[in-house]
Amino acid sequence: HVTELYQLDKTRRLKFLEEMSLVSEAVRRAFRAEKMNLELLGNGDAHLHWHLFPRQAGDLEGYGNGGKGPVWWYPMERMYDDSNRPSSALLETMKEKLSKELEKL
Image (cartoon, rainbow, N blue to C red):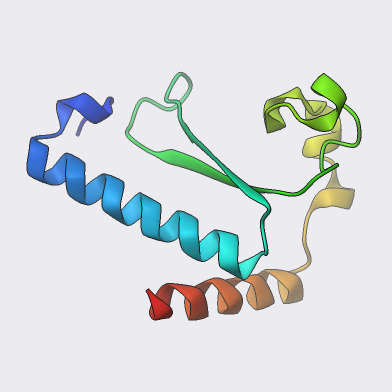
């Protein structure tokens, strides 16, 4: 178990970055992202993991730097509001799209 990218040996670190890059590409294709934001945090969960955010112009609705800031500038109470939660059917559709793109890579 590691908490930082540099703690992986070189072979695993390169494999980890390669796989993360492939998943990022699949997410971009599946959800037609204009830009992908990738974050390696770990302040709250002390294990190595990435956050991949497919972005679209205006997705922050004007919050933070005219809507061009990181997703964390969007108000948390709105981000986690039930109205932003996808339905089970939509989640299944999203999983299928992502799986198809992953299979292509």
